[in-house]
Image 1 (cartoon, one colour):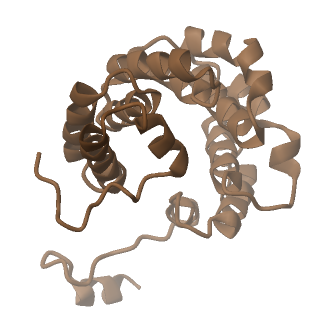
Image 2: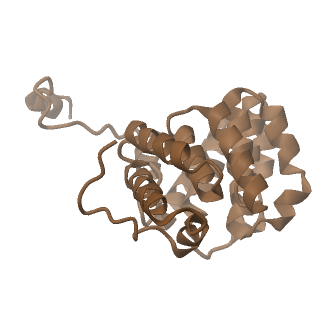
Length: 238
């Protein structure tokens, strides 16, 4: 896989660079560059990110950071079994529990929501930071819905983090998930309230809470550049 000239490998986190110090210098540089490409492309072009992760994995499969990056890349292209294997390897190598929620979500992706729920009750969850525990709660609620237990999903999301007025990086997603869970059990007015709260906290545009609110309010957005859109007809309907 080609590496752009502006990628040096120095862009990666210091902790990852330290892990790569166990490798020969030239090899470490090559691995670092591929990891930079994985990070760059993970959201915009997950297939290419996955390809770069496979190169890094071929070069340095015994480095925890490489296995973790390979896991996220596989997760990004819905290769959940593969992602789970990589995350498990990274966890064994580093001893860290921060991957526990996404490992549980991989179990959901494989079609084993009951396993995801079991993981939500494991001791590893207590060792997660607050953001990780919120993520685990989101995964557990999703597993409840997978199992056809929407009311239980609502209860799972009820927590001190949900009721807090403070805004954290995970606040919008938590409020959005709660709103969606409420809507799934027919509590539409409450769902609208929580979609609005999610939008209020969504400073980075991580959810489509505004679209969900518009949908509940019966507002339909149209693309004026769409050749099939008839503006005059729309005005006549008004």
